[in-house]
Every structure is written in C-alpha cells, then in structure tokens.
Image (cartoon, rainbow, N blue to C red):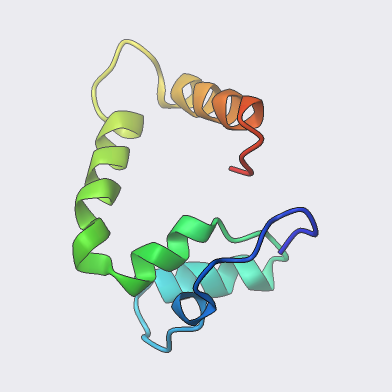
Length: 87
C-alpha cells in the first residue's frame, strides 16, 4: 500500500480468507508490487452485494459507446486524479 493511501476502516474486510477470483487478482497485484484498490477488498468481502456494481462498471467502460474503451479509461483516470483518488 502506498504511504499516502489511507488504510481501510475495517481491516478484517481486507484479510478475509475466502479464495475466489478477487483473491487471485489481489494476490497478483501484491506480487507485482501494485497498490490494490480498496474497492477490490469490498468486492471480495461482499460479492453478492457488489456484483451489480461490477456489471455496471463493465458495461459503462466496455459496452457500446461513441468513445473507445481507452478514451473512457483516460477520462476515468483524469477524474480520479482531479479527485486525488488513486485509481
């Protein structure tokens, strides 16, 4: 975790022991030395409650649009930077 990234309010969410697709993603990011977005821990902790958010995000970022996925990623990254959100 980056020095400027605040820890989660509920560290037990981050340390849940369930093995699933999100656990694999988080492990790969740790192994690569990449900061893990905190929302991935929430997705892993409550997959049923966050599945709609994952589908929504996928549709917005990859579904049909006049903007390419790359342009949408650039807009998201710029917006996150403007909001001082590590994304």
